[in-house]
Length: 164
Image (tube, rainbow, N blue to C red; front, side, top):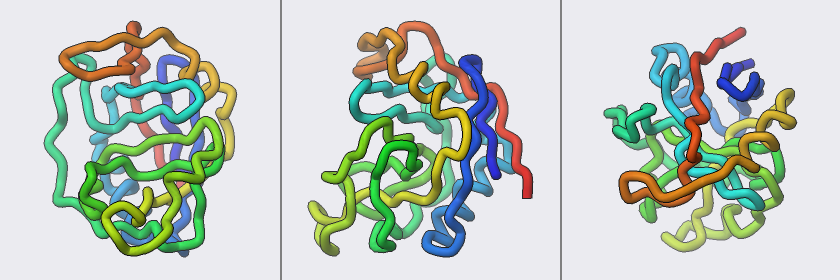
């Protein structure tokens, strides 16, 4: 289990190492190396998702390891409380950024192995702290440094703990 200790409260996540071994290991490596400590939820859209894992409190993007292969073809769906990898339009571009779905987002699910159909890889589930996710999804947002939907007051992942 992995716990994101945020300034809004704790969010505990269970990774799906069986269906998404590469993605779960990638997230775990970033977590164990302290990469997420001091990052913010930089994109918050109520009725959609909360995204973090890439920027510090100054909206400076952190350097990451190489992108990983998209494991979205695993039968997992982007339902409320699931955690998935964020990426660019390239299906295989995910590095460290992740998002937690605050509603069921079926349009993000794997459909086929095309650029538009690949979907977003769900690699875990929030097992406690959904009330914290719900608190975060409701914060006021604005445009900051060219990025939209950035919380006006930082929502910080202060540290991440891993219990194996």
